[in-house]
Image (tube, rainbow, N blue to C red; front, side, top):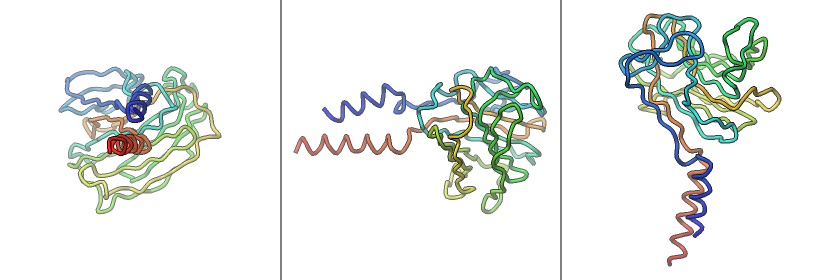
Length: 231
């Protein structure tokens, strides 16, 4: 009974079900700003400095769910000049800044920029405040033909993020944790954000929500309780 209750409770919050998006249909993709297209099973923004934030239900509209978000990206063999992959949270997607970056949604933005090997964190208010900007080199250097994952865990009061090699997660940038409790969230949407200065300098695919570790632990505990009762 305990196990069934745990399953019912967690399923009702959407934390167990997860989410997966695989870009397979070639062509234009809805984007709030810039161009977003699918080619060779990757979403990319062709040669557009303004980039693209895809807002068509990629993530559930809840900041109370601290699931881990993972986006796999591949630099497609290019030199990745000012290509970046990012994740924006705490945004409505429609409340725009209107000053320095008039088409950028307000909210928090994490960006990984491969050519300078930096992880950055912005609070997109009227002035787009950059609150974190440090070099995080990938051990052994970046492989332009490899798949990488931008991983983000948002607890609602802090955010932890890093980049890792998809085939070998032990190769990673190291984790960054930042307290986000003191600054405004402008909404409850989570979106992916991708900028590409080249014709096809990079892309991302296989966007996934992975249940948070505490959820997995509770499921395991429920199973143990059920086994013990049967004995």
